[in-house]
Image: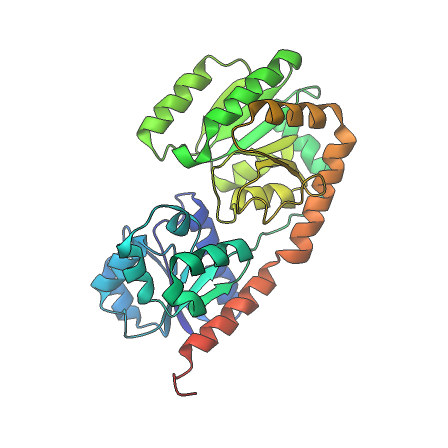
Length: 341
């Protein structure tokens, strides 16, 4: 099968979409397909027509649509969309419905997302398919964790809380700061590390201004993906405070690395985490509750290890790459089937 994968971001720009589309590209190539990766922000649309794919699959619904229109390939071969979260959680209007009407298949990551898309785009409900996002699970790593901690100059008694998030309003980073400030008063050895690009200038300025005077906080900017994974292995707690998510790849990678995760109880996060079994879910806008979750995990290393072990087992059992690729191949075959079959 000749497949064009289209994304608004591709490596080396490290975003959720770029990591996902590269994983899919590698997996489909390994399964014998002819695959080419296109960046809808940078590549010329004519290149897609020259490739002449059997099928087009884009990450995100809205951003690649105009590029696909310019290529002249919409209608010439089937288009499948993975809806990653912002394209159905945001207040997209009629242009979203128009774009999605051109798609033969709409992929979402979990049942709650499917229900939301079917509700918002009722006329397209029969095109919605649930294919959970996959994650690579590293080898078990007790010794690696100790090495990683030394490499980042983290003291044995420091409780390290890691956030991996682009600086934009939906990530709700101010909530994390408020809770961490309370926690820090009782745990002076605590550290909070934030990794990610500035995706919204105004929000970036607010976050960095708030963090500048906060004891124990460090903003590390955007790091290569391999460095982020190393930092996960060196940390004690992974934190996600988003207002909403699709299926957060960074949370999945933290769980796969055996890291105890605290996350807001919102769609996308609670699709992944069973609270107090594979992580800890906290309400939105409850800094005292979040601070207490920090305290609970800081005081109980055995609980952190138990949550991390179960999270890793969950990622291995339910979010494997082979299952994702097999489900995609089945959907591709379905949309390529003639309408009268």
